Length: 160
Image (cartoon, rainbow, N blue to C red; front, side, top):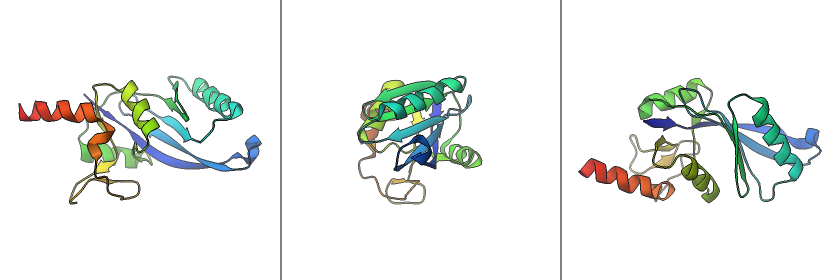
């Protein structure tokens, strides 16, 4: 069973919320039931912001609010059996990219929720010498860091 995570960036002007700065909110998509998550990572989470994001999650049916340290996300998840190429295509059709999990907080949140499940993420090695992130093409030298137990068990299964 493979879970697909996609994202797209949406810039939100927080002047309307009484906050002076801008933040980026990402929406993630896990396919079959089509997961969509609103993601925001800030140094200190303002109670008003947290409450508004949590409220948005509850207004949308089938969404779950998750929070770990300074990372908040709204998730709607499901299952899919797409290969990597089709996963990329599906996300593009949704106006998104495969999700990139670059921070410790994102990794911990995703790992806690999707323990022992196979995930497509935004690392790509097709026609490239090393893994790169599909959102910015930056190389990732230690891709197994993001799911160390997963890669260890997957390699053991492949080798036999």
